Image 1: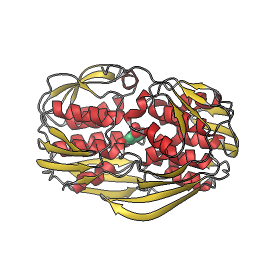
Image 2 (image 1 turned 90 degrees about the vertical axis):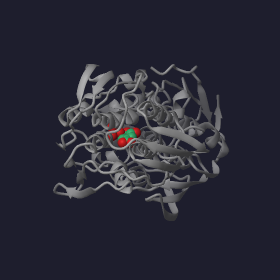
Image 3 (image 1 turned 60 degrees about the vertical axis):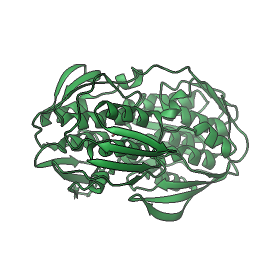
Amino acid sequence: MTASAAVCPLTARRNGALAGRARVPGDKSISIRALILGSLAVGETRIGGLLEGEDVLNTAQTLRALGATLERTGDKQWRTRGVGVGGFAEPAGTLDFGNSGTGCRLMLGAVAGCPVTATFDGDASLRKRPMRRVLDPLERIGARTLASSDGRLPLTLAGARDPIPIEFRPPVPSAQLKSAALLAGLAAPGETIVIEAEATRDHTEKMLTHFGAQVRVEPQGAHGNGRRITLTGQPELVPAPIVVPADPSSAAFPMIAAVITPGSDVILDGVMMNPLRTGLIATLGEMGASIERLDRRQEGGEEVADLRVRAGALRAVEVPAERAPSMIDEYPVLAVAAAFAEGTTVMRGLKELRVKESDRLAATAALLRANGVEVDSEGDDLIVHGKGRAAGGGVVVTHMDHRIAMAAMVLGLASDKPVQIDDGTFITTSFPGFVELMRGLGADLAR
Ligand code: S3P
């Protein structure tokens, strides 16, 4: 298990308008996938703009333990030398994923297709998260779970000697589940098929294609909201350079800070605009926020744009459950924006938030209540009664959850009294340099 660093309380207080330009770190989902596919391709893959956050670095460490070569060649520049599909070597020790659910679940898939046995572990937050949902398809492919209490970490997985291609319908909309099945299917002969009822982020499919695998994606379901993804197994993955765009889930924090802090005018550079990741921007648009997409362009196979964000009045909205997969990580900070809107915002269908780095439904409600915002949580819905302001003055318990920590800091920048968090150390899992970047825009964040 990861040794926990000393706790680091942080305080955010009002300090006038935010202004300037900034680039948030590289996308976490793409960074983790780049390291994994680079470790499975034969030859050298160069990656630029990699997120050098704890979740990604922990995943890199596990890939080294499995025999791949990963080197940092410069600032956010990495080089991998892969072992080939099915080529992982048995690791000597436990694979420690720290706080990273994505790293762990995707690597369970990658290991499941190789004839090696490995033990997976993580920190106290990751040990609470469900893994059974990933193990089910992997066991059908031929992997065996040798030890696990209640489908949680630590667990030991014996990869399949002769992996079998499967058809898999994820029981919940989850890119992690889909990706685990596809990565395991790489080593199986024939076609591995994943049928998702609602489309989730498609970075694995796109990157597999980029590395030369054959992947067919077809619309699925009456409204075409779902996807049928067919992967032809046992491809030779050919290294291809990867440029990681700025993470829209990280951009969400300075974006909403600018929207709710009067007088703000901020530009966020090179933010990925993959349509399966832009649910927050659509929602903020409906709330009346001013977010302009400047200089739309393609970078590394994704549309990116510089986002100009200006402060303004917000109105309450109803966010439909169908939008959740395209903004699943953005709800804590959207709930902060909802507090600054006038009226009642209803966010529906948030069941999956209960199994993130913390129970984010409960943690988000607690974050707001501790700071004088009226919140109801009914079933899987979160209801925020916005008054155009928040009292602040609370101490927020972050439960080892980076996004709860950053959402609380955003609230403190616009609330009447300062907001404190018990521990900001986990922010580095996804957003190293958060405090400095926000200070550069004029925020008052104190350690
Ligand atoms: C991710 C998928 C999402 C998201 C996570 C990253 C990914 O999780 O919450 O931060 O990179 O595939 P689920 O697939 O569990 O919804």
